[in-house]
Length: 554
Image (tube, rainbow, N blue to C red; front, side):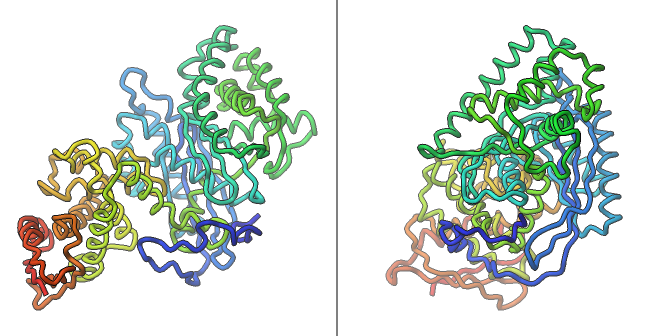
């Protein structure tokens, strides 16, 4: 079903009429068809999908796919680093992806990296190398964000009919488990249980010995215990759920089963039903065969044969613990979710995925609540920051609407470090935001948000600061310098946390001066502490924008 098809329950969607707290104009603008390419740099493989986006529907059509088994997850045991030879293979695979995308005249290439790069000690160095050698920006996404985009991808290709569905996506380094019903995902999780990871760490015999088989089974069960209990708690009493499976492991199992029971493999595989009993039989079979024998099974590639036993065991354990007897195959997942997320960000989807328009805002507000922020103060800081941003746009800076949203998030969360300690709370804010797993943001965007919050007080950004060094590009560092300078001024304007300043008006009497006309909330309040605070903090702003800042109370 196309993502443009309207749900019969759309009118009941809690978020269908919710206005974005940023006040951004989300009105739909007619756009021509676009060719997009999405790359998923995974633990086992590098995948790319090329699609034609049809904004008028809105939907997208897949026109090409590319896959290369690289095994980035086979990291150095001693150091935890990605191996040089595997990084070389990945670079070569990404270059081929770029060439293929160019042959289809792709307007944009969007790339994300997941578990293997996320966990490697030299993961960021690898992403910097990709940027340098290929001029390709790769976003590192968290496990929760990966699960969210998988959900979007599955929804783009299957109809849920507003009924709860569990999605399991078995990757090389992690497995994502999702519960959703067309609208808000009720549960998102990412567990460090993947086919490549488990094979590398726990399977040393071939065929797998009984002791290793039993240990691996118990280990998987232990790892799944908590997330599955949490997922079950999100289900209503008596609710019936269906299980949807995505990933290469599941598609391979479905292909083997179809070939051996039907004599052919359906195309597409989406919708194919795989019984748990059949999965158990295949698991038992794989465990008795060595690698060469597994390679002889029709439909099982030589690369997949290395990890199929662990991958099948993960799936069987999930189905057993959920007490579900049938799995339905879905062929769309993370890569397609990247495309859907792009369409959402560009205002092309207004139907049953509409709740995702505000996923960023709701995620930020959720983190603010978690850290018990003083919300009236946080809201004022964000409002002042956005007001200054808007009034200086095109004069002091040329930031984008997306940059504005990053500033809003940083402004709202800038004080969260107080949850730990008021002393050096700006540094605590950086680490708390950095590890908060904000949904809807890429890893690089979260890094930017955390750095903007980090520099709302004390020393300005410096090259020697570790947090500043984590920014991948010169453009990101420049953006942090500019937006954190704006945030400093916004924070100063509410020094007493009383809302003493009602409004800000920016004037430019000449190219070297910016005048701030401040309207007090209370007529008899001289706002002396706010003016003093601004005078103390304005130097960073003046140096950043090479302009003198003058304030007036009107």
